[in-house]
Length: 359
DNA sequence: CGACGGGACGC
DNA sequence: CGACGGGACGC
Image (cartoon, protein in one colour):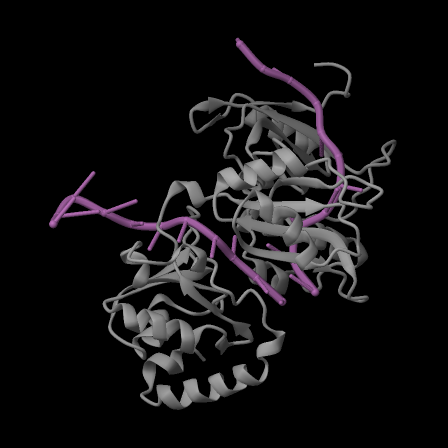
């Protein structure tokens, strides 16, 4: 569908249609503010006058389509769609990108005409890109335990004293529309986010009965993998077959994980209320993630759960994790094969999980 | 040289 | 209703 934008001349017609639609619905849109506006001013930020960040792009949109869309405003110096960097092939879009114009006035007009544009049931956000820097990375916080009465603005007001908020979101229950007491806040700088964690984690908002939790958000890969795992688990428990392929494609889950989830049948183990055999994996690198555990253990049989243990604040792996496998023989084979396995520059130690008290 | 988890992570 | 930080050996 987006291919039409590239392939056919009547782009203006297409845009006009989309644009009128988006104007009609503009009130529903939020996070359309320009997160960088506070830093723009005077004659600072030379490249930021031409360089834009584009968020909430449709999954199917390609880099060429991104360039094509923004070329309708003016001459584009470069367009970059950000894709994941998994060793596996697909390299699918992360849903955002950068467009750098030759002319600052074109960048400005691109914001005024394309910000809020609806594409494929998405509403894109177009704003000036902040100057590239390591200091702005990993500045997204996850907040839980908020009073249900706190609105997005309330939460922002609580956090804004620690820095400049780029965007925020309060999660609401699908059915009731009420707050789930969970929010995300992205600060401009990681240091600002760190200050907010230090000062607000474990604190009670005014009038609240319970303290809130403030920590760095997991990256979306981790979150989606975890979510998908539990979805697959529940789907599979209810009935075999079903919408597994659809879900797997939608979330682009690790191929290993998907393949072997299919083999997961009866999950109850005699004498154990929690199903399966829990395996302890030690000496994982700090950047280890769930997908590597699926890849390593999946080939040995039915894996029902994987978990990388991370530091609460930094989200870096603490060096170990757990894998649950349904069948004893397969678990034993995995342990025998993977204990002593070299992952990166580390030699793994793999064994059945011991009870909590000992080493 | 470090060693065994545990609400909630996206309307 | 949505992944906000790429890629870069050139100037």
